[in-house]
Length: 161
Image 1 (tube, rainbow, N blue to C red):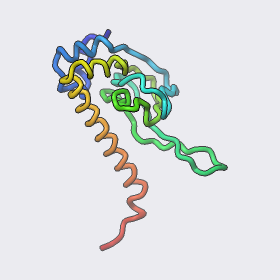
Image 2: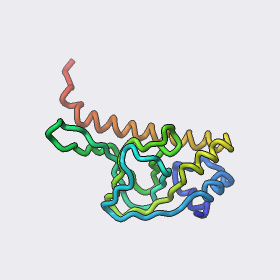
Image 3: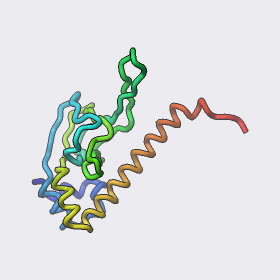
Image 4: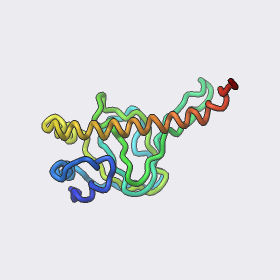
């Protein structure tokens, strides 16, 4: 169990009451991963929602480059201190949509996916807050992806008016 005050440090949980944070703290554990560890791959069962205390994690996908070539890794986002990842833990079908690779030594807080979904079913107000936070996380990730796409493709499609 993590002290609920520790959870207050994360913007993902900024709108949660002390009682809600206390409930989440009961299912929270600290985890550490050395640099170079792949935490999960796209398609793995989403075992947890993660709050990053220290370090950086790259979220990436493999892009098939053809039958005779190895896949290319495409970075979608970089997650660092204070941020959250693993929203797939609470969104059906509960499979990670990207792969996660630690590029630094990482310390994080993990909220167990199954217990989190149980809390969401039992406490609708808590479930609503979690889904609001997840929606913000997904929107931020989408914005980052758009920026990457514009950077890669935008200049090649710019026309003069």
